[in-house]
Image (cartoon, rainbow, N blue to C red; front, side):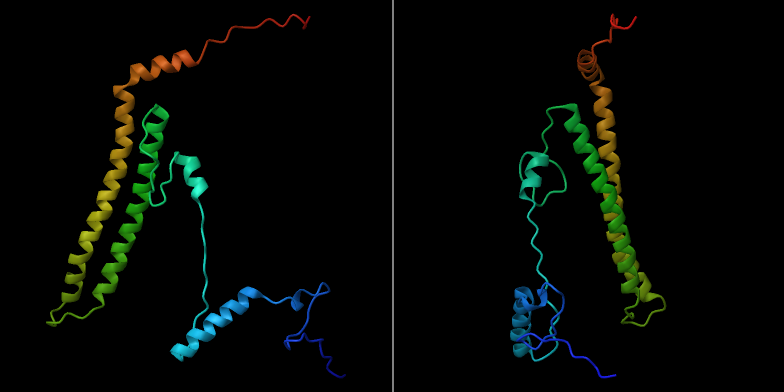
Amino acid sequence: MAPTSRPRTATGRPASGANGAANKPNKFANAGAAAGGFVGAVGGSFVPPINVTVNNNKGAARANGGRSHSQSLLPAPEFTSPAQVRNYCNTLRAAGVTLSIEVAMAAEILKGILAAVPDPEGRAFGSRIRAQKVARKMQRSADALRDAAKNAAACYSTFQQQYEEEINRVRHRARKPQQPVIDWAQQ
């Protein structure tokens, strides 16, 4: 049985698909090849692929907080209602917990990496002691972030306690008691 050859495009690539999608030039692949060819020619060695990601969240940031907080993890500090106080405290608590976990993991990773560096004086366990001293500072940062999360939760709790009368006054005014309604059509 003789091997069959596939039809090829003008560039020498095999054509595939019934719609001729392979006949269209891929402008992104050509741009990447051009960039890789230029860098490869300059560097004379292996060039990894280049990926560019553009993330435009300007509209989402304004919709959530009223103004753009492109670098902030927290909403705008506008405390004009109890809901905004609760939202700010909950967001701060969630960010503090998440960051404390990440920083604690980073402290452990840092300690493990630095423990592998030999001690210059050749002391027994010297590299572990030095690594522990450095990682302890990062662990304290993780502890401080955890404490910030606790204090954010405590802040909202204290707010509720101190302003309970005002909150309840508005809460009762917002909900009118339900009066039983007689349905005269149902007999």
